[in-house]
Length: 167
Image (cartoon, rainbow, N blue to C red):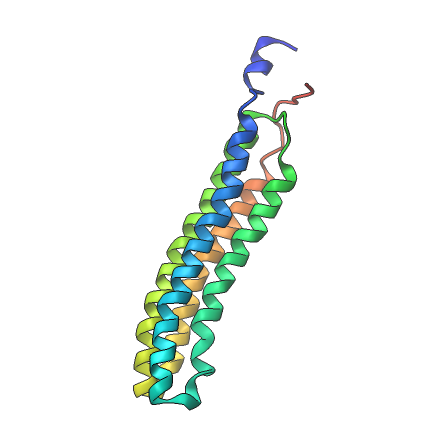
């Protein structure tokens, strides 16, 4: 193997893949936990005024938890492709994929939490606002889905045409 190929297979390449794996789950879980916590405060406080709408208003917290599933899926895909000796290109792509889903999930979780908090309080006072709240929650959830799609596209190309690292 020539020196060029050795430069493309450094010992630390798998570190970037592991960092992408961790980023995927850490950032999406932070977003999901913020969305759940922020909307849950509104769910319980509105449950005092309208206990009959309590289960209907839990949609916000459920949608926030879906964000963490996106991160889990990408983290599992990345972790299955990690190896002790891998191309630097692959490690960088795995890092990028993890950051893509993680940061999109973080933003989606924040959006779901803020929309859920305001939407639940508003729809408790005026039930006709519930459909509008659900539509805005869907738009917020899609932000996380965009990150998953980009991550999967990146990961599907991460090992195509890269340097082989036999030892």
